[in-house]
Amino acid sequence: MERSSVRRIVISGALGAVSAVMAVTPLGYLPWFGGASLTIMHIPVIIAAVLEGPVAGTAVGLVFGVTSLVKAATAPIGPLDPLFANPLVSVLPRLAIGFMAWGAFRLFRGKMLPLAAGVAGAVGSITNTVLVLLALGLTASEQMSGAFGVQTGALPAALASIALSNGLVEAAAAAVFTSSIVGAWKGLENARGRAKLSGEGN
Image (tube, rainbow, N blue to C red; front, side, top):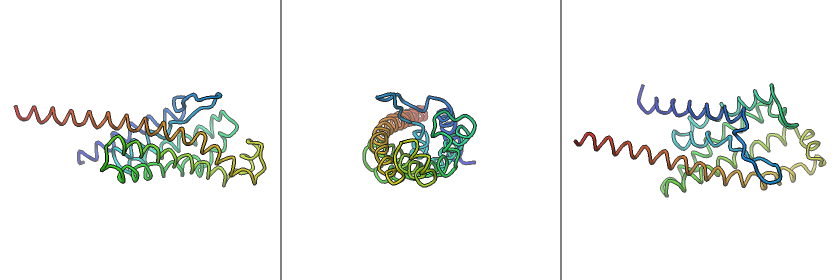
């Protein structure tokens, strides 16, 4: 097996484990104003896609989605959690995060690495928010309308409000986390490469 394939498997496995832990514990959420929480559970998916490509991102996204589905089906907490027992809500949107984040990174990677990684983080986060809310609106409109106390016809506006209020802040957080983590990882890789070359030259 090629070294690059082993690296991809190792990194995907490690980030998949992180994603699973974040999905089934409170570690995937950051406290926000008014008692609300912001999710950062999609960040390992984005980082996997940036570091190792769309296949790795999709694999970690699958772990994220499946663990979310299992948690929703076996140990729901909030009133909307049971809706995530539907794989169209919990799994399918998460498979697209890696592709979108990788595409954004590819588009901007000729620029500074932190900028490209930050854009990938924001795009991956927005992808998660939009697709999950869209899936909820299409598959559980009555339950969502009841939870928000609005008529079914007003649900799109309510979901759009959530996308703007929480989604944009989550995208900013994902951009910062992704840029910082990818930058630090690449810095370590470059330092190891220089140390190896220095050792071979002695």
